[in-house]
Length: 71
Picture 1 (tube, rainbow, N blue to C red):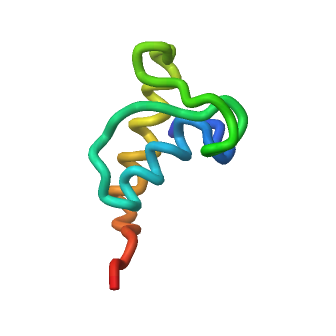
Picture 2: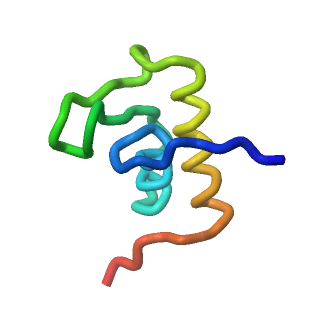
């Protein structure tokens, strides 16, 4: 049974997924309420669970191979 993660916009899972989608390297972070509209929380202020969620989003997108097509 796979673990369920909160996939809200700007959350750790979402940001990990987005970093993979845009082919950025993994650098755990998230936004308190929404991407770019609230304070950014960096890895050194994240819990172990938040960092796990970030990498789950990153890894899930890598497995799906859903990447931005740059024209």
